[in-house]
Image (tube, rainbow, N blue to C red; front, top):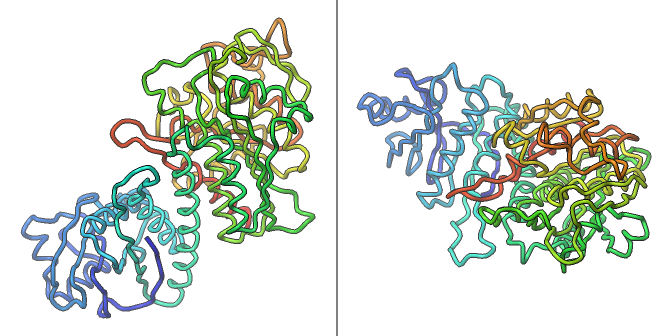
Length: 492
C-alpha cells in the first residue's frame, strides 16, 4: 500500500473509490455533509433507511454515486462524535483498509485525514491513517504459496496548502514507521529454523545496501575475548552459534552521544534444561521480537533521515536443552565481572541482555533502551494491550511514556526500587538470575538495572504485546511505533 498527498476539492476526480468517515448521527457533518450535498442527498437517504448508522467500523459502499466523480463511495463509521479520539479514528481507518482490500481495488482517494479528531493535529491524523491502514492489510507471505493481495495506491486528499504540508509530514512519518513495523513483523514471523542468529546477522548486513547504516557482527570467539560469559552460557545448548549484532546509524554530529537500542534476540527459546511446556512452544520463535523492533526502529529513523546517532545492539542466541547447556545452580561470569547463579535456565533473556548492556557502555550513550519479551509475569500484570516499563531516570521514563501515548503504542511504568533487589540475593554468586514467584517482571528489571548503572536506561518488557496467539497468530511489530515516535520527538 502506497500513499501520496493531494490538495483537491470534493468535486474533483476521485478515482475508483472515494472514502469518507461519518459519525453516528442523523446529521451529516463536515466532509460527509459536503459529499452528501454533492450527491443530492444520496448518503442521507441510505442513513435514513437504516442500512448505515455510522457505528464504529461500520461500512457502506454506494456504487456510481450521483454527482461524485468516482465509481464508488465508501463510508466508514466513527461512532459517536464526542467519543472519536485517535484510537477510534485509527480503528475506522483500519476498517476502511480492510474493506478496500476486499474490493480488490488498485486505487482510492481517502478524505479521512481532514476530519476532526479530539487529540490529533493534521500531521498526527495523516500519520495514524497510514499506520492503521498499513497495519490492517499486512500479510506474511514468506513461507506460503498464497497469492498476495494486489497493491493499493491511496491518495490522502486534503483541502488547502497548510493541511497538505502537515499531511505530507504525517504520511512520511507513518510510511517510515510502517516500513519498520512490517520489517519487525516479517522477522518475527519467520520460523526458528530459518530465522537463526546467523540469519539475523545477515539481515543486519543487508541494511547497509539500502540505508546509511554500518553493521558489524561479533562471533563467539570475539565475545569470549570480551568476557561475555553470561551470553555465551545460553548459546552452549544450541548448535547455532550466538551473534552480537551492532548496527550504527550516524545521522547526527560526530560529537553527539548516541541513543542505544538493545533488543533481545532469542530466535527460539525452549527454556533450556528448565524446559517449557509443549503447548504453544511454537510461539517461542517470537522471543526475538525485541531484536526485531530494534531493526524496525533503525529502518524508520534512516528513512526519515533523523539527525540523531543511533546504535542498535542485538545479542542473539537460541536456548535449547543439551549436554553442554546451562544447568540450574551453575554460576557464570558476565562481561561486567559480576557473577550470576542460574537458578532457572528459562530466565535466559536477562543473561544475554546484561552482557549487551555492558557492551553499550563503550558508545558513551545519551540513553539506553532495552526491549525484550522478558517475562510472563508482565503478561499477568498488564495483559496483551500495554507494555511494561522500568527506568533508572524519571525524565527518560516520562519521555518514553509520552511517545507511547502519542503513538498509541502504550506502556505502563512499574516500580524499580531497592525493596525488590534483595529478591535476587544468592549464597553462591553476586546475584541470582530470578527473584522468586513474586513481582517477576520487576525483579527482572532489577537484574538488568545492575548492568545499567553508568547511563540513563529504560527497560521495555513486551512479552504481552509483541505477538498475538490463537487464530490471529502473528507478530504485532510493537514497540516500533513507540521507539520511532521517541526518536522523532528527540530529533525535533
